[in-house]
Length: 208
Image (cartoon, rainbow, N blue to C red; front, side, top):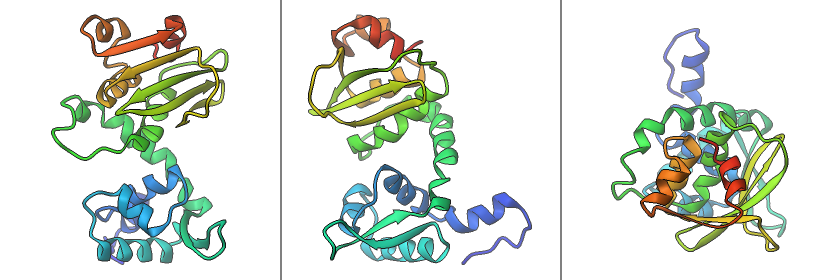
């Protein structure tokens, strides 16, 4: 393990998760435990041998563990309770990244499931929910649902059933709404966002 040789919490934390790809691996496992192939698919650009090295390092450090999946014979990776405590720092970095995201993807890879971590992190910091509500989100032909409750926000695949409203937009604009960098009025005025259903509920969720 690389050492900075400093008796400092930040230095010692970076010794564990500061290497390239480590926090992105944690991001994937915050979404759900994953098999090796799932991690390859969810981390476009990583070499298979490098992923294996990073998983081994994170396991030896106590950040993640290997276990058998529900099917009984397939190994999957999952965060340990200590590793799962990285959710807070990662959500903080997501919020800090807002100025870096304004320019759009610039051709970078994107996976819809990444919004399941980003959008709640952005909304949680600035929107107070007074009553539970679930709206639909559609982007890149992927249907999701965003549930807002007093305890926070959660995104997952659409589970069926009635929704009070559905928002259709490019992921870039969904992030802009969640960050408060884009208002619903402005987005609709220039055709960036479509809303079906109760628009007042959408305004509550994505409060400017």
